[in-house]
Amino acid sequence: MSSVKPHRKISVADIRLRKGGEPIVCLTAYNAMMAEILDPHVDVLLVGDSVGTVLHGHDTTIPVTLDEMLFHSKSVARASATSLLVVDLPFGTYEANAASAFETASRVLKETGADAVKLEGGVTQADTIRFLVQRGVPVMAHVGLRPQAVRATGGYRIVGKTDEECEMLRADADAVAEAGAFAVVLEGVVEPLARELTERIDIPTIGIGASPACDGQILVTEDMLGMFARTPKFVRRFAQLRETIDAAIAEYAGAVRAREFPSDAEVYANDNGR
Ligand code: KIV
Image 1: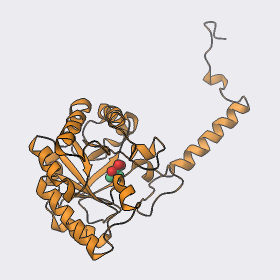
Image 2: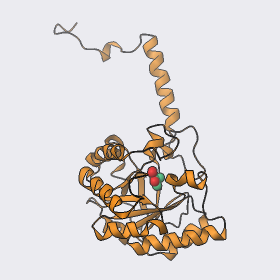
Image 3: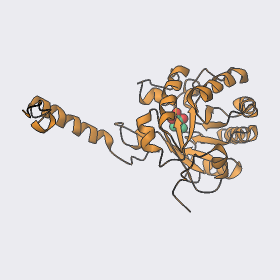
Image 4: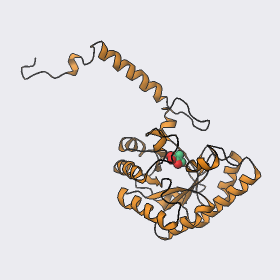
């Protein structure tokens, strides 16, 4: 199987066709600088509402506003050339009814240039997903551990440990696929169930803390780059940037305090060359 992404812009239809095929590579981005680095490597860039915890210092994603999502999404859109750009609908902007979801989603698509939206929920959001899809809004669903629901579920719990949870998750996966979502994120789902759901439904599953059998994988970029002091079990640190940044900042601080920075080579001479 090829591991190089095409040079043209990836569409929702391309992602849909990857069911059971070449794994779909997804990462989060919140600004143009990161998007520019990621874009040549990934199939999907997600402006996740994890921006609230990663960049804004919140404990959960619940306080994230639509204005914040629009702001970050516009920045990412400026630097993403070939990836499919998906934007999270933040908590409180789509759950009440399908019309409010359409209002939010249409703002996201019109104002940011995003290709699709993502929303959390299975059976309970199926009618909204259908409503959006029928009106031209491509939807990526998100089931399993739903960070926007942690107040109701009692925390960041892995899902699928009991028969009852497995049945609920099967129903959620079936519902979002049937409603027309083009893909679904499976977050924090026990491995055998994530594998089973991937075989069960005919849309791509994107795993995070789920299974290598999923049709694609997503991580929060700052997690996989090792920018946090601690990361959950499902995160592999592909770099140790926290340590790298810490060492660089310590070196800079030392150089400034010793008046060793800037050096002669790092300052500008006047017109006489002095
Ligand atoms: O908000 C987010 O970043 C997400 C992904 C981690 C799936 O929803």
